[in-house]
Image (cartoon, rainbow over all chains, first blue to last red; front, side, top):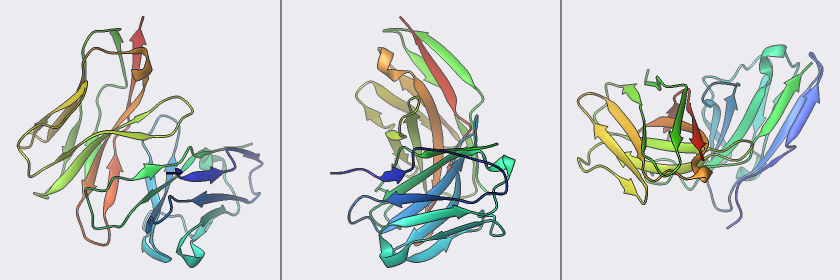
Length: 116
Length: 116
């Protein structure tokens, strides 16, 4: 099966600019996750979708970050305006359904964001 | 809130030898899942092994095995017969079981180097 697809792979922008990342989960996976992985740290969950509804966005900085998952498939994560501390790898993951703990999350390759 | 601690930022092992990576976690839950994920340089995170907290038997996947000590809240990963392809960041992760809102919490990772 095809894996989780993310684009772009790399992005360099200046602070205060905006940026968007795209994720296409594995076909049929109802749950989609966005993580932020700062250099030297483990991934931190930003937002979790179940189909097209938000399950958990408690750690999403909502003043500058937004995410949507229209039609319950693809998802877009946006940062506007970007700050220097947003430099990180943004990982997208998906799993078949939430509530099925024996179904692990599958990760994409991530988007490496550098803020100048 | 659950926390996951990996106290070894870096480890190295001679090829064909055995290495153990440490992980401790903090939780008040009695049922949960624990995972080890592997993240090779510039490549996607993949699942290595998982352990269900209600199972006393330690999980094993080929050369990878865990030592799960529930009372001590310890979850170490043993890699036997280390191979060059095992070089990567290894993340320990805890999954809270909460139907409709399962959240994966990662440790800070251990960078494993394999010495030829």
